[in-house]
Image (cartoon, rainbow, N blue to C red):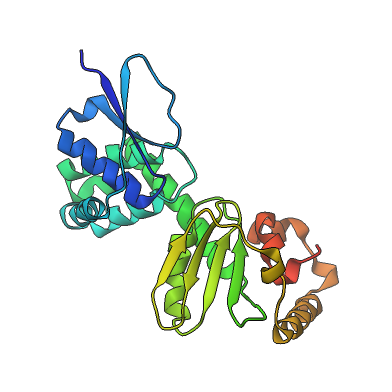
Length: 255
């Protein structure tokens, strides 16, 4: 009887793909292997194998997914890796095992529990990403940098970085994840980069420019003015604008 192997990796897309590469290259047998992120409970009948993130290996797996399965499958893998649910790594691994065997049609096998699970993980992240596109609020600091604080359920910064680097390529901006203590930094005319284990200095981030203060006052006034008191529906507003995003939205400050 073979001992089960658990590959433990960094909680990131690159980390998960590195673990997938390690599991495949071991040729130990997919039925005896699994992948996990974070802390793993030790078992008498399993071997825990730490996997270091390797960008080259992760890129090879990503390229194989796109060309041997499909771009749609890659979308599921990419967004699924950003989920806050801790079963995501093993779900991606088991999905890819089937995907490399079946091919592009794997995304249509929604009756399969692994395929269905990855679809739901990806959809949950994608839905929140769409929310963040509309609810993220930049403010101009005294030093001229555009700063936005967020506290999403899923890991959104890499996805938001891609979006806003296209929208504001010639601006200096930062997006800070308050829960994960991660920040994306974009310098005008250059590419963005991520930094983790960062804590925002409130003395800096709360000192906004005079132009920003003026804008905030006008924006709040506009938001209150267009509202129709007789047609207020708090429940509908919470459904369309989840309350978890309010504290970082200019127009909802103090509500």
